[in-house]
Image (cartoon, rainbow over all chains, first blue to last red; front, side, top):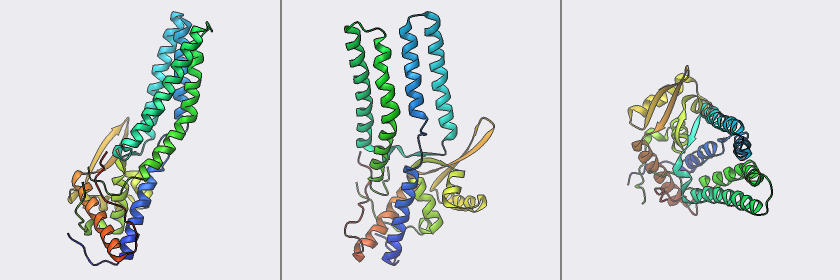
Length: 159
Length: 111
């Protein structure tokens, strides 16, 4: 063990600096506010176009979806100045992301199949509405939860 | 997995401690991000990063996104190891003094 004789107060201040700098990275606006509603809107547009059954609308919707998604990713990449360390998310964060995804998929599919069984027109599009809303509203909430998870991680992990 | 406490004079210098603390929470960070966060001039940050690079603690990469040059910095495996040891040493000093009741445990991420 190699410990120099620096005052404990200095060591405590240095640790406070480490914590503060980590918080700066984690609490930065990593995913912009427009990202989640944009993803939800694109998804809704795509499902509605496919469900219409009209070839020209399916083609237009598919191209718009692909172009929109590519545009979002490029805009996101251009804007990014820092990438939070993946390992900070850990198992808890991974489970939160998986649960968020599963809930949205289950809600969307469940509602769509129920509406289809009831003979409601455009069941997939209607079923996708809560999914889009869930992305727009739940996305920022998920990010907030992930930030809390990341800040709870121990300092100084090495792997 | 626990980390052997090892005080690192190179990392402990205030400016470098800030830079490495930012980098340890990232996969990579842009040069401009580090400059803005730490509040240094381009040349001052370059000097600090060169010192860290010569010690093998950071990797500096230049890439082009469109026509824009982007310099990014990442902490190397050696840098992460040194930082973890340094944090462990700081926590050890604080714990021995009784300043902190429960020091933040230093350990490798287990999940």
